[in-house]
Length: 299
Image (cartoon, rainbow, N blue to C red; front, side, top):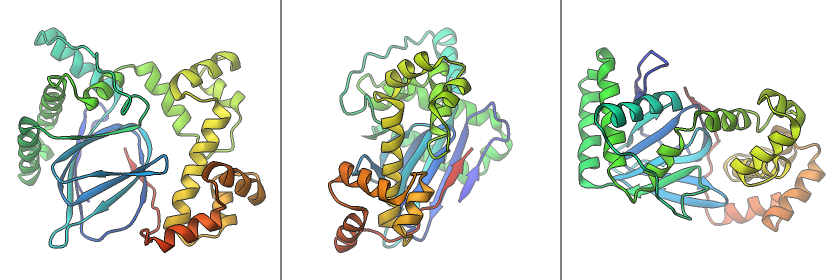
């Protein structure tokens, strides 16, 4: 991986990612929000028992938190993508600059069933945006961001500007939603504790909320009760471990913090209408990729 990263946590980061060998599905834990562009190859995003395709020349958005991704190189070249990573504080500063300094009218009137509850978005690029990402790719090749951190800020601002100008863009809606720093911090605490052995009372305390208020806000942001949401997130992880590793069912159950294997099997069958063993056998039969899931943190 080639990273051109600003050493200051207050500034956005621009990353160039290259991959030669296909490594299968990978769990990537994002501590910031991401806007990316596939330069070469194909990217797959796994979410809610579906596999979504990001083709060469398409743009994608990933929320902070965990994602199951697969990068596939072309037969004659490596996989390549350019990523912009940002925090709510960084985004807030950029939006304020665009609004106050450049008098840009920023509104979020986009209503879309496709992107409203998703933690990712995929869309076709438009000409100006494609030209932008290719120019950033050249900047990275020329090592410009290694010595010019201001250049990262300018390019991040330009990217946000180009996206905001597109009124019907799902990514625009997601970006503007990231401007709610309180919401983002609340969600980040939840995402960081998916696999921890922690009670709902302890989570409420970490968020400085009463239990009643915490449950109400949790349902507002995640559209499910805390118990149901955590179970579904852990089951999603077990599903991908089953098709991407050779770990035993009991090992997977323990790794995802289920109380015992029998209970895990019961929950899995209720969710996916088959046992974990049946699910694994079925997916091996249809030639699903066999590669170990590796956790990667983008800080």
